[in-house]
Image (cartoon, rainbow, N blue to C red):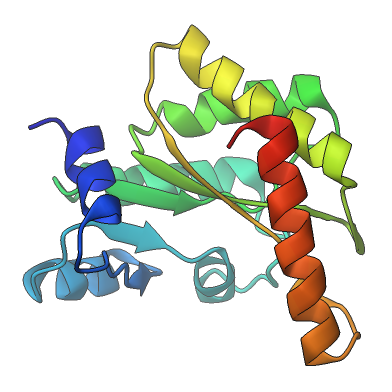
Length: 177
């Protein structure tokens, strides 16, 4: 079974797929040795391990180099936390997605954060469509976990939950995630 199928199938089973976030080769090996079905990275933990803050402060080339080290050291399916893919335009997004996909990841976490705010729904839907188009162009299957960072806002918890549900539904409708 190929790695993409090996990663995708457990998402649709009775028992949930549990992904443990790793931040270096040692944590990856510990998770792998504990019987994990896949490896997932944490942008926050990786940035902190390298002495940077989260939010794409870790330089892209350094992040790609490190994620490649993870890929080279595991045979399990790999889910990469790519934040917003270090991009403020669709062209840059496509270029960076191509670079991330060269790491042979089976899944990505993709945020809707834009500096100190969020992309609007239409923009984020276009960004997700760009990821899909780039993957298709490269003949690459990718599982996209499109997440909202509305929980970093200062609204009360109930309000954030309602907004997150609304954003998610609207994004799915517009981008067919």
